[in-house]
Length: 125
Image (cartoon, rainbow, N blue to C red; front, side):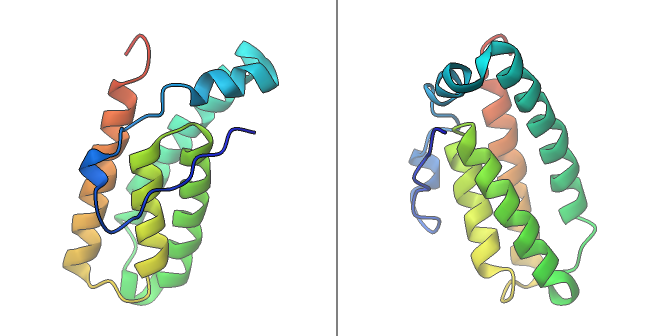
């Protein structure tokens, strides 16, 4: 499967493209157009739900769950080449234990923006 090296999560996120252009085509070559489209649709639905769910969790009380969900999001985003979202999910995964409420919400805002930017860069968006 296509792999994306997740960029350093602490710096340069704005320099990262929201989407790696060749990632989806690599997935199409592996599983076909129909399969890739179906998997991508599931990714969009699950990511939207996951981003909303993060906002219902307290980092002080749910840091383990937040880290696990962020890890899953990081992997899925990387599979489709959503570099910026993957980097932010990595940051959340690595800092879930130490994040305070304001920092957590700021990071979620960045993740929402990265999600929207990735969607906007999709062909036909």
